[in-house]
Image 1 (cartoon, rainbow, N blue to C red):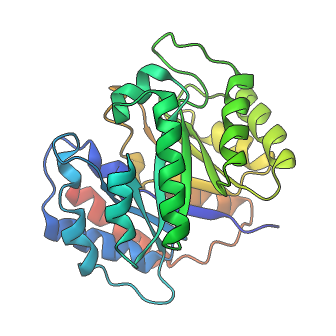
Image 2 (cartoon, helix red, strand yellow; image 1 turned 60 degrees about the vertical axis):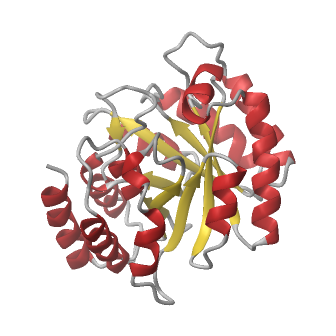
Length: 284
């Protein structure tokens, strides 16, 4: 069985939290998560502090992280080439993530650019990543539909996926930004894209209500997805989407489900339990 990659997303959990989390608390929490043994840690972002004030201290957090050869690879979110240039200055960062929405309304809300303008940003960010030996991870935001009335179809999502693949992007995650994906649409996406693009790592970034997470994970896993984003206690979701009812897949649920499938995760379960307790203290 192919190993499963878990991307733990404390940045996603923190970015929309209503109270500012102090830098020292972020550092302690992130260092605890590093002990767990996740494959990737989505730890921060290089975006406008006026838009996402919770992430204004990413540069201060980074040098305090206790990294070693066995640590999770670090992922930082960027919204434009300016942020990508800042992130590329840090050798500790492996992945740059860019949210590419196939909903025009959401792309304007999220990055203040149209889809066409954002595609140009992707070109620039990809060039920076290649120059600085980083990997660009593209999230196809609103990949399963949107609440704005913008046109959507699975064929449209496939069309944009193929355009991004043609630009040399090697990691693309399908993002269920407002939790509208269902097992059938997830099956259609992964059963078609994974065989068509064997050289691309295709992930699932699912947002979910508490009673729908399992069916989403099961559908994606059944049809070949081995890259999942999650956050402890299911905290998070996109603050630009303005949907307070939909959070992330809870990491502890994902881990439990994968264990039932006899998937070897090589996680430090004691460190995970302590991280869950720490999350309960931070996110109050």
